[in-house]
Amino acid sequence: MGIAAANRLRGMLADMGQPPNGQPRYRLLTGPDDESFCRRVSAALDAGYELHGSPAATFNGTTVIVAQALVWPC
Image 1 (cartoon, one colour):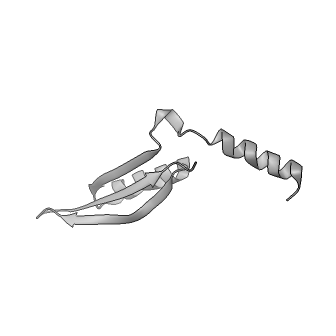
Image 2 (cartoon, helix red, strand yellow):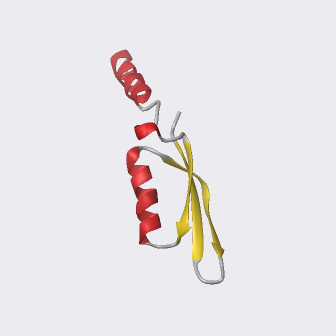
Image 3 (tube, one colour):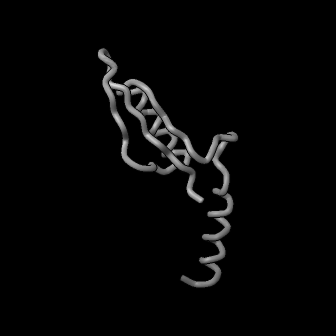
């Protein structure tokens, strides 16, 4: 990679320094295991967040509840 390309890459990464709309750098999304939850995780990934760790799931006697941690890349 040339110097100019490396500088462009650094500039792009600096622009990504903060999550959009004042969101925190770390988020834990939770909810019922349904399409809505999957769409929330997908929207966070589309915004630039990255998955952090494995998803978690539990059963509350009626519904499967899931959780997924996400982090903003530094």
